[in-house]
Amino acid sequence: MRVPYFDHNATTPLAPVARDAWLKAQDEVWQNPSSPYRAAVQVKLRLDAAREKLALVLGGESEHYVFTSGATEAANLVLAHWARVLPADAVVALNPTEHPCVRDAALYYFGDRVRWLDVIRAGVVSVETVKAVVGRVGAVAIMAANNETGVIQPWAAIAAVCRSACVPYLCDASQWLGKLPAGGLGDVDFVIGAAHKFGGPKGVGFLKIGAQAEGLRGQSGGAQERGHRAGTEDFPSIAAMVAALAEAEGKQMLLETERLRWREVFEQAALAAVPGVQVVGAGADRLWNTVLLLMPHGENHRWVARLDKRGFQVSTGSACATGKEGPSHVLAAMGYTAEEAKRVIRVSAGWETGADDWQALAAALTEVTMELNSGDVDHVVQV
Image (tube, rainbow, N blue to C red):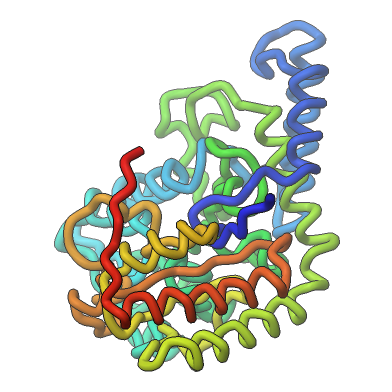
């Protein structure tokens, strides 16, 4: 029986088209693209073709795309680059709800020279806020869509503001890609993405750099990826990543309106089923697949365990924050208390999630609410 999986923002199942691309590349072009013989040259040619296909999807020139091990490596490359080329007293402006891969890298390289931008209650950094500070900072980092709440930032307008002020801008597009059209991201100075967020394999991603960022070249000490990073390129995984993204762009984006309606119906059902529940970020533009629910009572682990018992896989928030002490920095930036942060559960669907899955999850929430209200004792399962 298929288990309704609602944790796609943590990782997605491998798309069939990605699996096929990986197997084909592993069979036919598995050699090291840096080797000198003809078979390796064929791998290099296909690697460049994959780069061109990625540039075709996002925009911009193919030589500005660097394949990485994921978004974390890409973020560190950008922040390390800024630390090297910006003035010693330069300040970077950061959205306080950024993913830890960007947030932690900024704090590591800039420390107290990180300026946290103001956000409204829904967690959005307004274009006016960026305009007010862009002339006094060395760089800006604001994601496209939040991994916990699904809230969408006005990244295209922010990119235009930063471009006019000649201030470099980093956009983490990990949650945007594969869910909403990627066109226009190629106009942003720096863009990062991770394949496993949109149906590709784990351990591969990319970094898009602007023409003005050639200073990034050579900092890794390696000759791979035109000198932008060290390490042998994993072409089979790169081929799988590009195939997954191309399929999403070519076919699945047409289903967005329908999927958004399913999410909205689920939210109404959840509000009716669980008296006092809140949808975090309600009223703001959000990804069609993401709902962060603030439950009225009971720690989130109790809700997750009871839903898991019924076959529904949901999460307590960001997978990258699991195991870390303290409340979600995303919710704290939005004005929620530490106690409230312990009561949130995140639901994140995929393209294969059906309307019946959403409906079944709403029904399960009703059952769990009745159980918790009746005071049933939770049972710990030893694994």
